[in-house]
Length: 445
Image (cartoon, rainbow, N blue to C red; front, side, top):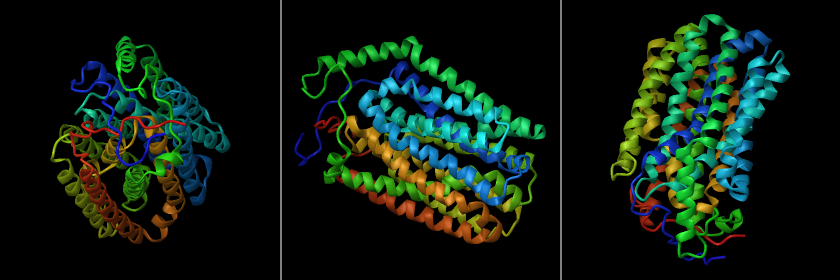
């Protein structure tokens, strides 16, 4: 095992090259993990009111259903990333998504509450396992100076999953529970199509041939034709150079995600129960406002590998906090809540999960990225799940208190994010320069 005195300096697989169409295609196919993750969260969220009525759920059972999804995603991320590092990231990259399809099909066809819960758990666990794996697959194959852009594409896909799912929910709003079942079913079909795309597309097979050749041609003993072997998590966390960014990114993800997860799962529920909106209004305007977030995320892709990334992050973090403040003074006025959600969709996409993904990939070794990001994903999602248990009750009993708590979480995420990028900058891992001395491969088990 290597000594922990400094960051290893193994050259990236495609040092000095620019991304070609195969890299972008890989990023999009990997981003389907993020798309399907967002889609299951949002589809369950927009369907909560109808599911509550159809199955006769109590408020606590509504919270439990939402929490089951979040806990399942956390469980999948915790073990899925490690399994990927041990068995081969590319190998399981093409397998997890089929399990997701099974879970979504069960959700779509569930005749009873227990089977609905089972489908949520299966699909959620598979989505969680695919998240860190897909990001690691992309970052490992990213050319020099393009890692941030390619990794951020996965977040663009996540942002795409929100308005598309909400738009579909709007179109099917009058279909009631049947419409929700259709939404679940089409996600199962999309997962199967994505599996076939990852497994058989000739461009992706061509890229893998180049990856094998690049590894075989490397003069570095640790880099061979196969994927680098995994490293023990405790060995990573024993090194300050890896431990500090791991803890910082985890804290950032928790604080930011408590806000984003609450609005992602409960936006429709919130607009209907707190703002008095109809189901169709809540889903339709929710979809339109998240299109704004998608546009912002596409712009962020152009900035993520430039010196403007950190400034944009700070601006976005402030806007996210302001959005929660606006909601906090809404006092049941629907128009104010709509404005708050619009501001949120700008701020959250400039200062959110894309930064967390890029920071993690830039600061950690190739052969442990999926494991560590899976671990931090899991901790964050477990926290979100606990919070989701009480969110419906808080919305009913102390709505303003909940919103001001989200203000505090937004400000905490901003502070931790600033500390994170300052730490990385001090190590020379500045936007667009992370591959000059990359944390590429360290000693293995």
